[in-house]
Image 1 (cartoon, rainbow, N blue to C red):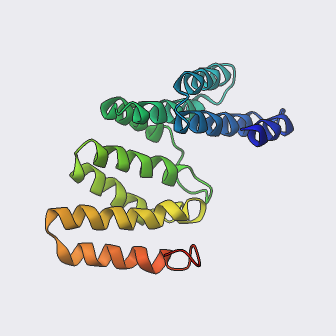
Image 2 (image 1 turned 180 degrees about the vertical axis):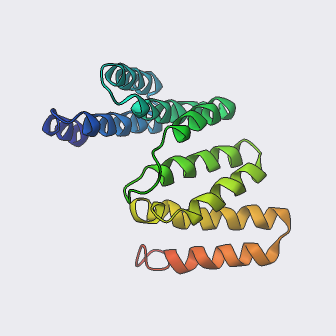
Length: 179
């Protein structure tokens, strides 16, 4: 977090960079289980967006709220925030789009909530999203792994093997020396 705060000081004149910085900070707080601090950060994002012309950037607030809801195992709340966040994403023509990040976690929320059909649909959409491969290549690869598990549970062995194979093909050299 200290490194993140230093980076925040360096981007003091750039609202968009500040919002990304706060989103990451809130996400880290949520992952650490510091949910009150994550919530305060989400509120800070909300206030910052309200003071700008970047109204669709409220998606950063929704993303932090999703991470809080996921930590609380509140999948329906998380899914609602994700639907709001995803609806505010720009058209994915930019190679640095957030679509991959948001859609991966939405799919995972569907899967964790016990809705494999919607999870499968989101993961399939993610692997078809070409810009998501650049900024979030790890999530792109992991989507194939998750799809393999979903297809395996559905009894579709051929699709499961195909997806696991795609995952292994992408992941095989990611961490040399680690099995």
